[in-house]
Amino acid sequence: MYRNDTIGPFFALLFSVALYLATYLDGKHIAALHGGKPPHEALSEGQIGLVAFATLFLIYALIGFFSVWLEGVELRPGRHVPSPGAAVTLVAVLLAVVEAALGGFFVRLMIHHLTVEPVSAAAQGAVFGAMMLVGAVLLAIYKKYYLGDEVLVEEEHSEVPW
Amino acid sequence: MSVYKWLDERLDLDRLNKKFMRKAFPVHHSFFLGEIALFSFIVLVLTGIFLTLNFEPSTRMVKYEGQELPAAYVSVLYIDSLPFGKVIRSAHHWAAHIMVASVFLHLLRILISGAYKKPRELNWLLGLALLGLTVVVAFIGYSLPFDAFSVTATQIGYGIGKSIPYVGDWIAQVVFGGEYPTLKSIPRLYALHVLWLPLLLMALIGLHMLIMIKQKHTQPRYAEEVAPGKILGVPMMPMQISVMSILFLLYLGVLFVLAGAIIAHPIEVYGPPGTSTPALKPDWYFLWIYGILQIIPSSWQIPLPGGASITSEFIGGVLIPGILGLVALLLPFLDSRKTKMRYVELPSQHPMRTSVTVGLLFFFFVATFAGWKEEFGMTNAQLWAMLIFIPLAAWFTTYVLMRQIWGREG
Image 1: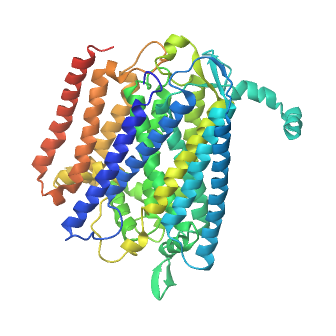
Image 2: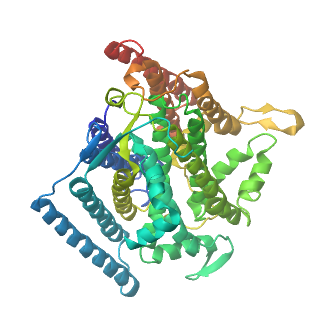
Image 3: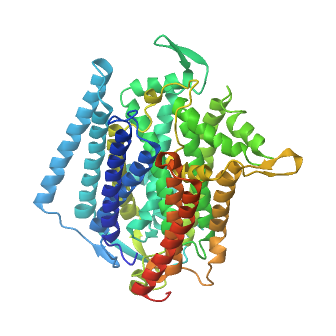
């Protein structure tokens, strides 16, 4: 908590992997107790808790790494004007094309589900999730290489919000 | 730009920008735990709007594929059949779990960094209220699909609520519409889940954020060397907003991949409520209470005047969590300081507070473990011994190790 370093996100990622692994092993244990086949296809209450914390730690780790990459380890007052190179612009254009393709594919999936046959929830979720993740990377590239940085020093007593 | 100019001439947007949008936000990734909770709430509201459009909050029996089934259960099957419907319902479910977990971890971060001290005592109390309310809303949401799982899980909560001496029956009437499950139960729980409690949550979140903006964030310790006595941060617009948007998209990406891959509550697996009660436990955030209930003998009863009594359910489900809650409420007044707190306190410099927090976490772990008493074939005496000695050992070991590594209190 001294500075915005990657120690917290790194341990969050470790916890996340450990908890996902624990969920998997718990499932194997439950199945073993029932002769090799789980009693039903739903997660147990304990597994839901493990996955909830595993996912929270994963989100926290991702957010932490992005925060360090975008905002730095320590703030220093002033402005930083970025100068994006051709390679960054090319990557951004390619990602924008991927984003558009994923959007089109998602619409096709929905139409297919409605008119031909049900599409698995895993595929629907994966395509939509990929759209969001690519969108996040695109926006991060914009923030890092086009928007620039600004760090303020503010008086402790301000008029906001009163 | 002409639209902006048009609006600016009428609403003085430039002044709004200078006054509010230039507010400085200190930067530390641990501050995003509260934002993850906020993102979860936004997702819950948005996915919840879709669900309310298709859910029928009723237990009337309807014909579905040749069977007589409760309307609520059938409407959830209908939602699952819609394009993206199953994923949205699953995302709603997972977002609720992640919100409970993130509010808990956010409070834990506040606790170990001492950020509950002057002048932030009020926001600590609001945070506790938000944790309690989030758990209640999530618990009520579980009851709505009206399958065998949700009915059984809700009955456990109903039993705890009803066990409160003198007011238990009144709580059962207000929250569950009478003796659960009655015809009134689902409409009552539905109204609480989609309207009254979310409105209260919104009001408390708004107040929490308003106070946070007024009092300012605590800051990472290095900021004391860079700009002592001032707020060092990035402006809300465009820096903080752009980072928050990126993080929200990351959150959505992970959430929806998970929601599609693992359906948290596949109601067709458990089926509609029947005569046989499936062997289930309550949701994970209630497992520690359930565990305590498992190791309190049902013979523990204290009669009270007027025919009421303190039951084992009340002791395990209300009294023990209530005592912990009371200690949490009093914490900023017991561990206080006279000067205003500006910078986070490093956990390593406060070994007593950090080690007590570790001990408390172990208490929750062991109490949760006790929920599997029968599966592990353990006795009450063994579990009581574990519940008392493991947290104490964790506290003592952590304290000694921290003192050895980092020395005296800071």
